[in-house]
Image (tube, rainbow, N blue to C red):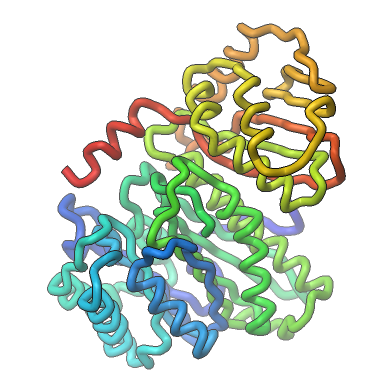
Length: 419
């Protein structure tokens, strides 16, 4: 942990933010399904979105809004329908929801950003929106972050939220975040949504640059199943209500703020990977010795995304050959005679040669990690990942990636997703 501390409140911990989450009737289950995050003042807005060619209307809407003006006051998120592959009517529905929120908040529709999650190809239930948005706005409060975090989830087992506080110029500065995601997770920038709030003052271009770099070290380094979603959205608002001087360049304060932003994003990204559909444990792949950091991250994500590696971990099989095979196909050059692989404390390969190790003890290590992960603490699973460490012996680059094992339940959940 850096020079900051964990605090309560998630997205409402930063000054000047309120949030709400309600049940509007968008989900057949009757669970909460509509969330709103609101800044009392105009906030600098930045976003990172799916790279899929098939995109939800909300993604195109946000891209257009942020290209015209990189600021916003509100983020509306619905769960239940993705509003992806819904044609012109889906676009009109998105516009109407923004207008409804703006009307009840008494702000411009251009100040509203949108996000959706749920089944692709289904239009949003507009009657539920029309009836729910007034209630949602009335429910806004400085303690509404938890309700919002519950209202954005779909197949997630637990909400995902965090807030951190540091000091700049002797004044407290806070960043809070919530996220959803469990399946269809393979972000290049999965179904993955995350919303971040901050009360520092940051220039428009710098806030976007910080968020992009944080995403590359967090959400873009997780995978559950190799499928990138139509709806991936990471949106961050910074409203300046900490009353600290505006950060316009990467000075010491800028580096400190970006480090805390990255920490928030990595915490939420790992929470998504840990909560992967059917998963029994979190996996962290640590790659060193790559030509550069980007190459290291590429190898790490290839390993953690390998179905063979993920299946072996679910079976508690310390089959390091699958790790070596995934590293070799990652598209990063290295000499196999330099390759070194560890699973936890067990050295399995060194100098490109197999090493003797206690196979049963290695399997027991994998089993213990899964047992620890099944014991929730405070609604969250323990952050105790299974560690795979790989050294390519080909440079100073290093990188991390996170994922989960591949279980029978993943197939069951997704085989019955719409039925």
